[in-house]
Image (cartoon, rainbow, N blue to C red; front, side, top):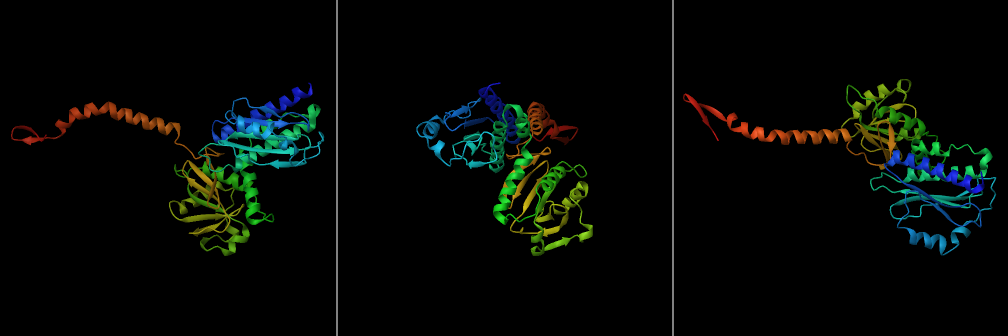
Length: 347
């Protein structure tokens, strides 16, 4: 396989996995990439579904009319390395989310996908594109002999990792690098609780996760003794406890391992909140939505009414419309009252 064919294979497999994963996370999504492998290579575009159509003038300005994209933040080219990577942030193009980078094995790359209007936040999607940058740099550095072909599959299943990466980045900015709060156990617990009904009812209420060092500053209205704190793995127990904060301003409080107690009113300065609303819910960083969750997985967008409920509602309307003429015919009969030996209509 020649170099050109190998590069094309890497691009196609990566972009297919990226598109499939983002479609599951955000709804139907297209993906594209702009790249240049070696320092003197021309800019290349792979846009199989015409995502970038309409942005040609901007791309001409960025990549054809000037060589600044090639000279900016130079990094020495070494096809055997990929770990030296300088990020290139979102280009802020209308309707698009983008993220790119420069590495020793790929001198420039910028990945794109759609910015859906009902997204809770673009951060997880940016982390997803960032992972595509790393995967492509790694694959090109490995060359054909060591190419594993797993990048597409990896990006196809990246939703929980993308949410986690975004939360960790934001957490480091807000409270520093010294936190020991682990995110994966929190995300796993949220998804398990979201798909656990209690007496036929789906979970409602807020479960907030905080750092251990925040606990002494919080005013609990109820608190479990340390030896009796329910662990997050005990999903059925937590699901029952969640009923105590349903439809109220009370909140169930946990760290990444156990349930601590219940507070009322304001949350601490930093928290991750799972706001359960029945069959769906929202994951929030402080008061800002990060993503939604439903059907046991995370989504970037606000949940829409299910097809089943919409279909059932439409069928009910059709049935009512069909029965209306019969009801109008029967209406005079319903309002007949006894009058002497016969019946007299009130209408």
